[in-house]
Image (cartoon, rainbow, N blue to C red):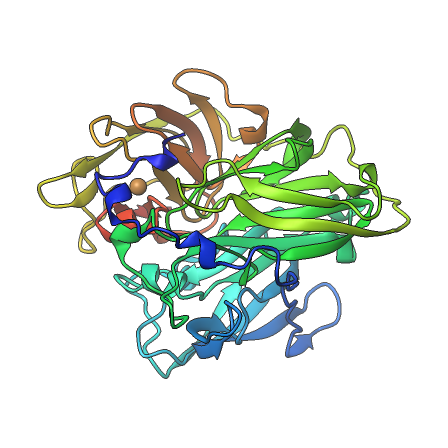
Length: 462
Ligand code: C2O
Ligand code: CU
């Protein structure tokens, strides 16, 4: 996998032994904190819930014995909002940082003015309300900054939150629920000896510490039963190829846009920046007392491969199961419009380009029409430097049609909002914009690339 290939900034910049200083399985996993609404307005049906999210700097302990200044929502590594389809959420967001912030609900089907356009910034010391209608199917989403030129750093310094939307369809399925439905936010980081976080865009291969819910390579005590594990990769640039134990089967059940058409048993799970992948893992196949390690099969040379460890510590009843079919993907119709997106790197300027051009906030790149199905071809033409790219679209999820002409793997057959395109390959997908007009972004979700121009702006028109 080309996660090992960079823009010529390879091993030379990597100091030796970074990984050895990291604790491995020394700290327990912290479960993501589920936020309580400030007030419900209307108990059932027509009501909505209000949450407060304040982003500010906090000094927290990440590596034992040190203090790290991070930028966090509500002081948490990834606090979680749990929402239900049909019941809107209002977030009262305060920016207590010294830099602008433009909160974006990644995966959200929301009006343009609540989408966190890079120019629609919340200035330091101000607050505003975001309205999320929750009129889309159940999925695992997340919140992060999109402010022009500040988003990569704000995200790297920890300002992410989870947003788990459920609906009746999903609730009816017998999948693991409650405390057995566990969101995990994975990322990499580089720490200086004094514990401070180090952020240089060119360091993307030198971020040897893996954090899960803000904890370095934690262990997690589980019961010998099935768990639904919702993985979100909040790394700026790192991909993971996750393996459990000796390649023990995980049951892949969902991706960016929610449940897959059918479960996919897999020995390895690939997750690129901003993607969500969900698996059901049955820990009842391990005797109580077992320790099962989750590793990253594409760790950079010199890094510890361990991501976290599951310690099976007790038995528990398990009424859950994974049905043989989950949720059919919607029919997006026959495409009436085709577009092409060529992703490339310009070594002369260091810029990453879409169709030969860097992002220009003054330019509308194209205008898709509401309700019209489009076929997008995304080509990564960068065989010279071998840089992988992704394409993420705001507002809508899409369906992959093929990769280099071949039907998508079953794990990619559901709704997606971010696809990775390896060098010299192409991906086609169908997308149809609905409900909301206005300006929305599309971009590579390797945040360093996005910073260096790999973003465009579309205006959805009625
Ligand atoms: Cu996750 Cu445009 O972003
Ligand atoms: Cu890219």
